Length: 229
Image (cartoon, rainbow, N blue to C red; front, top):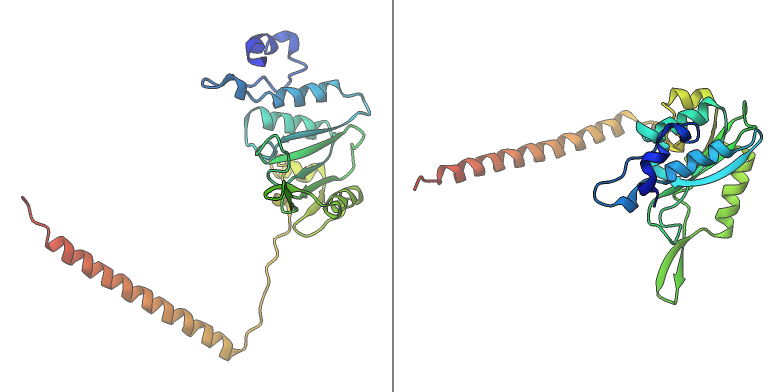
């Protein structure tokens, strides 16, 4: 187990490979040590000058505000080696129920756009053995992910292309949702429609206030019946 060699791996000999640090060993369950952080750093360290890689990580890695995950994201952005990130639907991998995302590294993407995609809402339920269900991606959904990612297109609430500078401004977040444009829809109302809506709000508020007063009086009456024994 990695936990048995934690102190050795955290030593000076491997400081370049595990540049962001080695995770601590959990007190209760050694097997739950976040070794994926070590694999991720090992892959980054081992990449050639024009290397490319795809790594599956827990989705929480994308926005962790401190510790080893943020240091790794900082290294990726500082060295301009991020091609994109795709957040997958929950339960998409049979071996884990953890929400996962795929990070695509590309050392040649120095000045290019970074594609951030939220595919978490894409899913198709498929029956297994005629009764049980599992979450899968249909071929159409797979094609949508691949085609949109490769094109670097911006699609509302699904995909966005950003620069490294924008990522730095967002505190190194790799989560697509934090870059989506917030749209506010305005509805034109006539004076009569506005008055009708305001009357409706006022009527509901009057009912809520009346109910609040009733409950207040009831509580006071109940308290008045309490006797010391």
